[in-house]
Image (tube, rainbow, N blue to C red; front, side, top):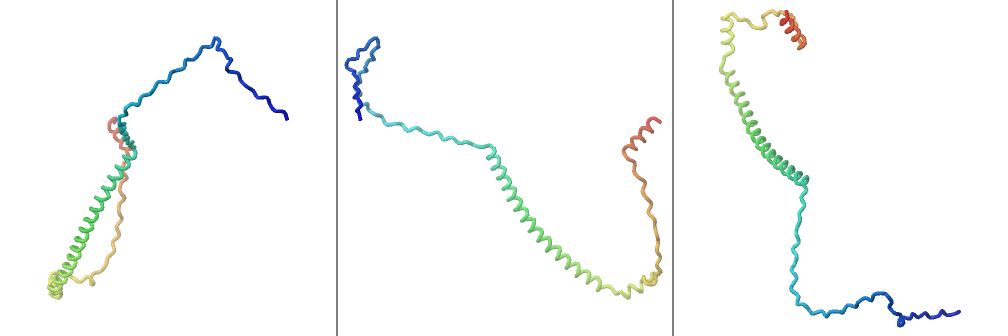
Length: 157
């Protein structure tokens, strides 16, 4: 195989024609500057508030408060119910005792004699009669249209 010829660029013979030569900037010697401590930047904390979420949380807290108040009230009502239930049971037992005392104080034979003296007879000796009553039908009420008609007839009659 044949070797490729070595390509050499000739740069030493290049002449700058009308081309403007670029100035080579002289490198300035940098002096070591005294460094001050860097001030730490304070990060601004931004809090984003969602109005719908805040409204929802507020409504939930209000509902919780209402539920707690309702639970306290229902507890108080149950206690009052128990007190009243005990009171009613005491009244019922007292009423039963009073009825027993009342019935034991009266002599039924004495009452029967007094009733016979007044002309009263026992229920078993009375004759029974059946009475049939027909209930009259109520007159139908006037509708609003009939009332308007009645008013106009009275107005223009």
